[in-house]
Image 1 (spheres, rainbow, N blue to C red):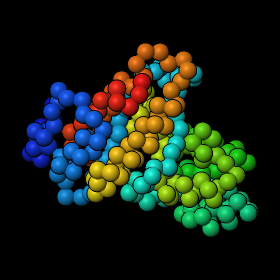
Image 2 (image 1 turned 90 degrees about the vertical axis):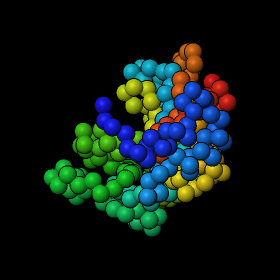
Image 3 (image 1 turned 30 degrees about the horizontal axis):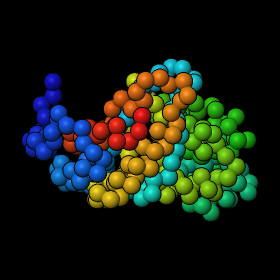
Image 4 (image 1 turned 180 degrees about the vertical axis):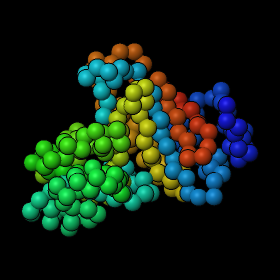
Length: 232
């Protein structure tokens, strides 16, 4: 087992591992446990009582956080003509079509954080499924990244839109800001994404929906949150 750093162990002493914290308590504790010299990202990890292997129990969506994520995302848009111009005007970092498919396939180029495509371009983008899919970058109508309203999609991503989806272990991982945001902004971002996840509960899900909710920073231990205070 890897040895924990001195700073990690110092942070661990500040957390009661037997306690389930109220959300506002957890957000107040975050600046105290963040020991790195850089502005750490605050991460949310939610274990759900669903089975993502079944299509009717998938949990996936996107939300624009009230205070963004603290990170400026580079956006690649697959579009042509007027829609390409619209994407450029909205602030997209890269706009094009087949040439970017070739660049990704041949150069292993991934200098972007999000991908948007107009529906008529999905035939082209589909050729990148095996490359974009595992990285969580494949455009999807459910997350609003397959749309003719490319200007809105780009602006939302730039404003701090976060996608959430189950991984293979039925856990959702998502950033909710930076340590420097402070308690109030982190709490508002946390509440916004948790409300969205709770609202997205599949009708077929049985039993406890929120199995565990944990917040942490890039380099610190996790803080367990009382899911009963959030909803079922």
